[in-house]
Length: 222
Ligand code: PMT
Image (cartoon, rainbow, N blue to C red):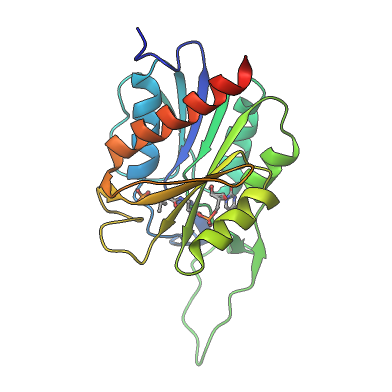
């Protein structure tokens, strides 16, 4: 059926936050609930794709027809994605990956001291950029969570990370971005492609995004 527009394709989706450990009881993270990424994975599976969902810690059920791999840190996510990359047709990076992690993880719980304390952070690998540098035939789709200069930053990331599409959400907007059941995005692609989507439930948005992307990619193929 024409509904199974991703039949025969392998789609890898990342979702949720990462956790970067400070000590045995503490970590750095962000507000990603996983809802947008899980909706992307559910939509890919509904459309017939072999779907691998690489997920940070969230409390969502595994969507039907999806294989989930649970990870914790940005480094774990990098390893899990890299292992799936060669055979993937589409990679969708919805996860909110930490840009920094503590330079050292304390073996024991860090005790309170007098005065202020400083945590030294080091950069994590930018997974999307790494994938962009090692791209063979995969279609790479990033998300950009921004609070200002949304379109400019999204277009910069599209180019810098060698992605094929960048889906931007303004996370300051009510009922969009982190944790909400709805989202409002603009998708950017190569050659100044740009399309604005209305505010809608993440499930519905995910289906519309895959529809748009597969329509464009299939017309390029032949
Ligand atoms: O999970 P929800 O609560 O539903 O919220 C959804 C969402 C807001 C998390 C999602 O829609 C979203 O915008 N995800 C991307 C968040 C993000 O980290 O954006 P960024 O602008 O920091 O990163 C841009 C892209 O690079 C992303 O595709 C990200 O996965 C990727 N990245 C970033 C850093 C890093 N070290 N490795 C990466 O691969």
